[in-house]
Image (cartoon, rainbow, N blue to C red; front, side, top):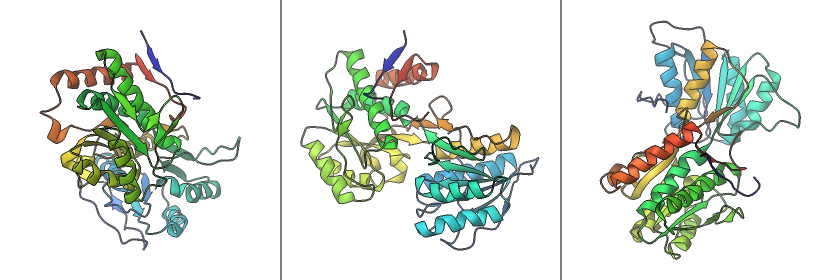
Length: 361
């Protein structure tokens, strides 16, 4: 029987190569030439947002995907780091002048620069990471590809784990800003808690997000860690002992509050055990495999040719995933780990469908 969870209204590989850090906002790195046994006539280029290549998050993951393509596909490359939003457009233009076959921009803040470059340079292809292009209604460009992620699938697994591991019977989540790329996490998380209750005759409560009403707790931005801590403390006061912040850098503010309460955190986007200073309280993480998306797009370009069709990261193509339990590996019961693997396969096989108006299409 196919399960369908609805809301109202709606990697493949990770490179271990060392990063070649370019000077922020200055001239792009010199070209890198592929080392694969058979090099191909293809050049992929990458522009960071102001986080830079060593941000332990989106930019670094994107760069690792590029490095893997260099090593395994034999492509050439160029890249440019940005230190301010004012550099996004010029850095994209610089990559175009480098005769790149495809230019990637990391994050929604590069949307305008990539879109304008795509309109002005129809012979060059462009890929926007973690966002759609803001075209006028009916407008479409064959050289512009969004790379987006259905994180609700992996968050579903995280919600199940959180419900299974909660000692208070209350788990929580909160977001930075109420936008689809945030609330899709929260929808999946809510459905995972619901599935745990259904399968185990449980009554674990979720605070911070009402998936039916699409209302919940938000800090108001993605940077204010003080506000992030305050929102976390509000959920802790409601007895939540495992909390998933979906708020970028603001989510780091959850760390000290959770440590003080002897509670646990579920991180998002990257593996929080590796990318934050709170690994000892990170139960698991809902990951966007940015590097896998970059690699897949480059591979497509070298083999079948670039298309403007959206890349949607899923559990099936390993564009999203659940991180290891790390320090909690021995605490997660084997039956819970087995249930998570079964649920993951159900989602891949289409037996369980997490539906949300916030999910990418």
